[in-house]
Picture (tube, rainbow, N blue to C red):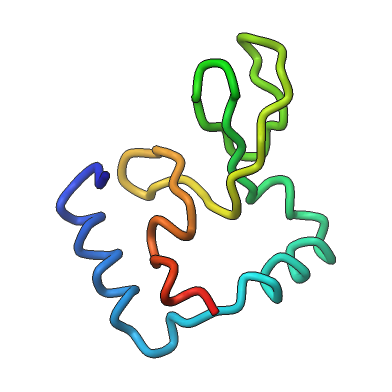
Amino acid sequence: MYCKPACKQLTYRLRHQPQANLDPVVLRKQLQRQRLLVAHTVYECPSCGERFLGERRCPEHHLYARSLGLGGNCGDCDAIVLLVDLLGEGLLA
């Protein structure tokens, strides 16, 4: 699930920091106001299962992808990671 031990260590630290608790509804509204929601949303192609960040359509299959949630790129390997995968369900209010 983690690309490097450094990424695993970072997610452990984020999970165990008291200020890591955040409300995804508030975050979504802030991103929506800034018109950045699509750019920070992870989508998955229903045909091939490939994940895209900020792209609503699979360029290979020309199908609309389903939204998985908020996420971004890993700082080390540039893989697409969901916020829930990093912080866990328990830390998202």
